[in-house]
Length: 139
Ligand code: ATP
Picture 1 (tube, rainbow, N blue to C red):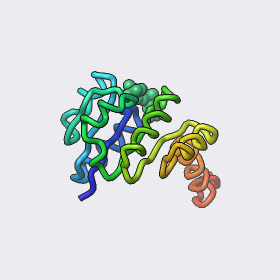
Picture 2: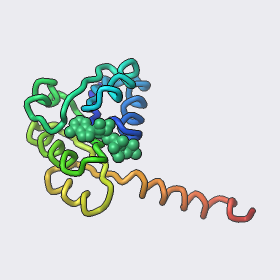
Picture 3: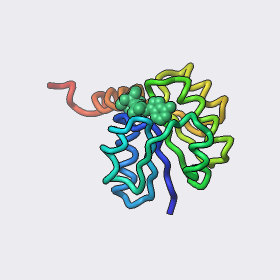
């Protein structure tokens, strides 16, 4: 069974973490904000307060043993990049990162992100396609 670490517990990160945990996967959730950690603690396997740009902290948490990392530190561009770099240096096999825009996404790819996602943009595209292919526009 794959093990997941989710870093940054905003709306996106916490939704990923709780959905994986509900599907019975092992999930380690990390955020530097104590309230965010407490808010998710009873929904995931482990929830820990830590700075995701602190390489020693990530090592101590055993992040290198996880199969997949999801990084979503939206409000802090440099932390998002630094955390991604550290995770790849620790040889986490698959790192998915949420990016606010394409330029940021390019940097994330350069530092080793295996997949970059743009949830707001992608959901906008999906909704538009849904509207085009359904009869909603007829009303
Ligand atoms: P959304 O809510 O749509 O997912 P977002 O990604 O902008 O948007 P934020 O509310 O900004 O979400 O959440 C980012 C989270 O990342 C916050 O909970 C914040 O505490 C956390 N965070 C920011 N910097 C660090 C860091 N260096 N280490 C750990 N967590 C961090």
